[in-house]
Image (cartoon, rainbow over the protein chains, first blue to last red):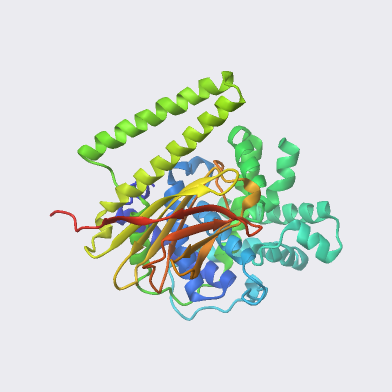
Length: 173
Length: 260
C-alpha cells in the first residue's frame, strides 16, 4: 500500500493484476457496458490511491476493501442512471461462464464465494441481489413488497451473516 | 448514532446503499466502537463474496492498465523538490498555524468573528487545493509539451462549499481529463452533477459526485473523449438542480517535458 500511496508503477500494476479483472467483471455486470466498466475500474484505483492511507490490514482484507470501493462506486453510478440503461436483475447462478482462462486465485475466490452464497435460501439470495446488483435500498424494497422496513433490514442482516459464517467455515478448512 | 442505530444501518452500509449522512455517521462510530467495527468488517466481507461470485467476463481493453497507471499518477501529488519544498512547507506551516488558531479562537469568537474565520479557512483550503493542482503541472506523466492545463477555484453561489478544478487538454483530445475537488459540501446536496460550459453556452455534463467522505469532501476524476478545449466554465449542481459551485478556469500552464 505504501507503493500505491506513492503512485508507484509496480504497486499499481500489481494491484491491477490481482484485482483488475474481478472489479471490471463486477462493473460490467452492474453497469452493463464495457465503457462504463472500464471507467469504474479506473475510478476504483484512483479512489484506492486517495484512501490508501486509511487502509488497515488489521481491520479487513485488501480484497474486501477494494471490492467494497468498487461496489460502492458502481452502485452510485447505477442509482443515478435511468431505468433505460439499468441492466436487468441478474442472480449469480444465472451468469454465463467466460470461455477464457482466468487467474487461478480468482477462480478459487469465486468458487468459495459461490459456496458461501449457496448457504442462502432462494428468497434470501433474491433479496440481497436486489440490493447488491440493483442498488435498491431497504426502504425501496419495503415499499415495493409491502413488507415492514425493519423486517427487510433484519432479513438482509441475517443473509449477510449466513454468508459470512459460510466463509468462516471455508477459511477453517 | 448509538450502537443500536448503527447496527440498524449496518446492512445497507455494507451493501453500499446508505445515504451520505448515514455513511459518515457509521464510519465515525466504528472508529471508536470495536464491536460495531467487527460487525462492519464481517458484513463487508460477506458482501464482497457477491462481487467475486460474478462470473469472469471477456477481459477489459488492453490499454486499461496503462490508463489506470496514468490516472493514479495524475492525481497523486508528486513529492515537491527544491524551491517547491520550501513553498509547500511555508504554505502548510501557515495553514497549520491558521487552522490551529481557528481552533482556539473559534471558542471565544463571536458570531461575526467566527464567520470571518470560517471564510479565511475556506479561502486557505482553496489555496491549498490550487497548490496541489499546481504541483501536478510538473508531473512527469503530463509530459506532452503541447498539453494545456486550465485551473481555477470554485466558489459557492449561495451557502457552503468550496472547490477547485483542473482540466488537462491535449491537441489530440484523446487524453483530456477533468479533475474536480470539492470541500465542505452540505450532505443533503449530493449527488452533485459536474458540468463544463464554453463561452457559447454549450454544456457538457461530465459526471456526478454521489458520495462525500467524512470531511464532506470528494475528488472527481473523469477522462473525457471529444476534447475539452474552450470548456473553461465549471458548474457543480446540487441534487435539486440548483448551482452550488461555479468557477472559470484559466490557462495555468503549458506542461513541458521534464528535464532529463
